[in-house]
Image (tube, rainbow, N blue to C red; front, top):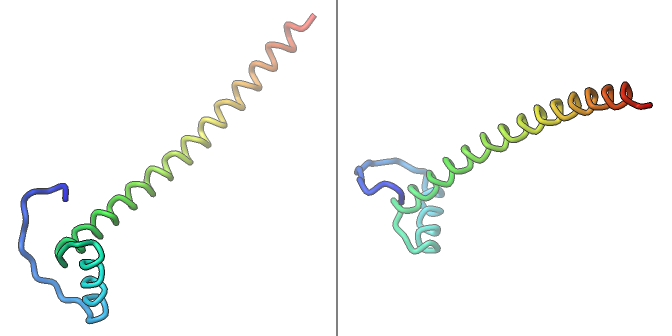
Length: 83
């Protein structure tokens, strides 16, 4: 876990979610708290990756528009200077 400070909280879960948490805790060799912390960290990582993916897609679109404009301008100069 990234943070060293721990806060004690109480949460309520449906029985099937608690059973899943217990299975994950056993599989991951951790506690229920460790499961919750890990899943929250994974959710945040997924959120950040989604934002990055959106940003990269937008940047790719902008870069393509810039490249097409540069190609158009270069073509005009090349044709104008063609003997």
